[in-house]
Amino acid sequence: MWSLLALIVPIQAAGQPRHFQRMGFQTDTPMVHDPVMAYEDSTYYIFATGLGIQQMTSTDRKTWTVSTTPVMTVIPQWTRDSVPGFTHHVWAPDVIKYHGKWWMAYSCSTFGKNGSAIGLLSNRSLAFPLWEDEGCIVSSQEKRDNWNAIDPNFVIDDNDQPWLVWGSFWDGIQLIRLDTTMHVAAGEKPRTIARRYNLNDPEAKAALPINPNPPKNPTSDFAGPNAIEAPFIFKYDGWYYLFVSWDYCCQGSKSTYQVAVGRSKTVDGPYLDPDGIDMRYGGGKLFLKGDKIAYEAAGHCAAYTFGGEDVFICHGYSIAHQGASILIQKPIKWTTDGWPEL
Image 1 (spheres, helix red, strand yellow):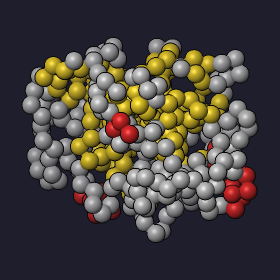
Image 2 (cartoon, rainbow, N blue to C red):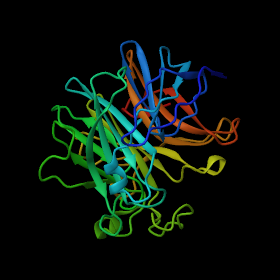
Image 3 (spheres, helix red, strand yellow):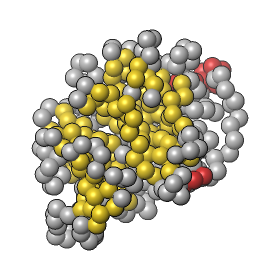
């Protein structure tokens, strides 16, 4: 159910005035893509893909007020200079509190190409509308990099060390160590921690337990067939759990997204599935897929602990809403041998 409370405030171009009306509309069925969540001062926040990053709030995680003002009312000029074709449609944010400050990473790209960048914002409070531009964390260039700088996720290890994990297609999921400003630490280079398929690394080719000749990518002539993206790392009981999305998003009812998971004792891996297969070589335990009753497909997930409960969120392509992407929330249960279930 949707209750319209205000007109949409258009996004502002660089250099124009910023407008911060606290307007919105309420819904108990939020339409989101690539959602992440945060909690501060009795309020839950969702941030998601949209013009300038979509945002919404709730006090109970049931009824949401969708803001008609985006997180980014001004898109930094450096994003358009760095990413050909990018304008205002900002993808797949992530948000985390670290050392008393909120940090938000976001993706600048165009569909199916890896000329991309992950930008950084900071803020003292989620309730405060002015996010500060902190520049670029990492970028990828076509024909230079065999990875794609989108779908970021922050993770803080047990030593209070921040890391960034990201990736979509090409050579799969990448991980890098950050410094305390949430930029890449000196001397660090990305490392691959998960693939769906692999056609380049001789070691991976030899180890792959799955078809080394996957079907052609139906959505992009550039991205290749390594259909893995949207990583999220969640810590639980001494393990780091790496959730990833397999197959294809963004096609409404024709989407085939599904979520897989592996785990590691260290944040930099190796991440193994229950059969001991390394996710770098095609491993991963299937965790969630479309049930063909409520959702055709589901993916791009996140996981949190709220009020002592572990919660899994993602978007699902709703059958009742003709393939629109809807927020999914489910409690996580844990098996006796430490694997997550819904």
